[in-house]
Image (cartoon, rainbow over all chains, first blue to last red; front, side, top):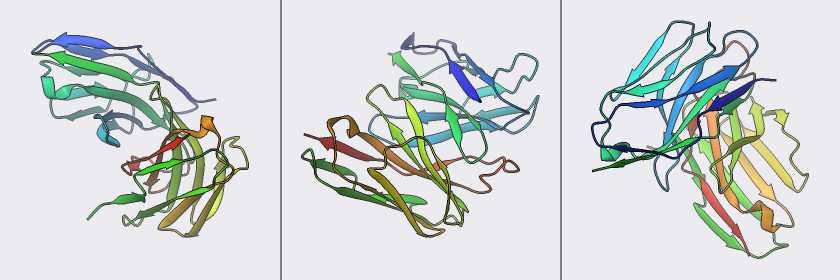
Amino acid sequence: GDSVTQMEGPVTLSEEAFLTINCTYTATGYPSLFWYVQYPGEGLQLLLKATKADDKGSNKGFEATYRKETTSFHLEKGSVQVSDSAVYFCALKGTYKYIFGTGTRLKVLA
Amino acid sequence: DTAVSQTPKYLVTQMGNDKSIKCEQNLGHDTMYWYKQDSKKFLKIMFSYNNKELIINETVPNRFSPKSPDKAHLNLHINSLELGDSAVYFCASSQKGGRDGTGELFFGEGSRLTVL
């Protein structure tokens, strides 16, 4: 069945460091792919998405490119801020369900 | 105006009790979901409904009974609560939940259930 694998956390970075969180997927066809962010005590918010191969999603300085050759959708940001500290989830859209990775906790230190 | 709203936000109850969580979406979506998030933040789908019809029941114990009175509402009733039911339960919705849909999932703020 469909699945999403993302890198284990926690990831701890200094402010202004470069961020990469790896995400790979297994699916039939080419599903829509998403990154969600969850701040402490809150629900999940959509960070960015891509609906077809080679699409690049971007938002708030974060980017991810849908790579069908490597079945990947890695999240990147050039310069992280303390306010980016949160849990990040990679997800794909299946049929009447969205499948999530295990989440990666990011902590950014001032 | 909250897009997906669920109540209550917190429930604390004893083992063996019954509890309900209500969810409403004002986005006009045709598909609604319940997800469970455990203490390690792992998100697992429990149920999905499309136009009030149950589509997915992901091997959830039958103590959990969802009900969708209309497309905008999906409630969750839990009987005979157990310690392992302690979690955060998220309601969510999307448009075109089927294979032809490409859009994102919209989440409610979650309902934190603590069973003592």
